Image (cartoon, one colour):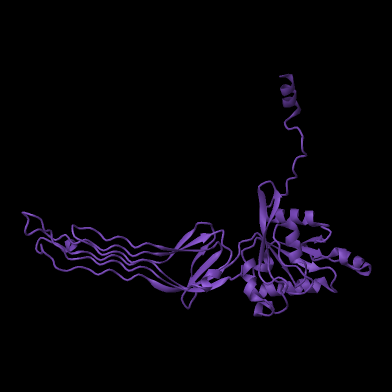
Length: 352
């Protein structure tokens, strides 16, 4: 499925139904009072977050949405039927903006969360609503109000606990394919990853976290170079970052500085996130470079040396990622068949 993370749509809520002029007419009641009913309210346009959606692709084919108008009132003071709402489903993580000032209307971060983006018009009153002691046979009514109409910008920001950041061909896609069930395209050339990938990493029974792999950054990415700014937004929600540095390159420290500069230029808070550094491709480091790589340090940032191919260091890296996301270490599962309980309790069970 093609990945689309922005969309521009036009929405219009339903108009309210009009009230009517009507008088009660029954046998033996030739001059009954006014009984014109009110019009029904127009339907709203509602956005609803759906965790099963991962892209805004559908909005490339349909850009206009309109809710149903309310029904007109009728005699016997019957109110018109309310207009049906139009519900538009969007991926969880969708931000909604409107107007030239790009005012934020809402941020849909939970499955099932709803946001009314255009309200239906109020129904007009029928002539029965205008009856008074001095005007017992009013002959006017109210038309229904128009529903709201507006242009909306949708922007999808993936919801992930950990973001993988690195230069092109740093091993991000290989790592996410090893630690999760995600299967991104992997090849030995830059910009293999053209869209963000999400993977769920299982660390314990029923517990895990979500990792996002975004296309590789290059110097000038925050100004749109490479795949640049169009995907940097997808790590803004992450709790932690993992910087993947290719250990076979001449100067991993320089690569790290480039990544920090690009993140800070896009969002100054990103480099301040809790982070881990992983030196990748340790299995491919030439013998002449091994000592130099072993001496590499990056301040106080947590450092792991890994190989996704041989899976060396992967277990410790995942455990550290889990700890930095939750603040808790990974709980090792009990060996199969191990007895539980205190010795005293086991003795009581045995005596029974």
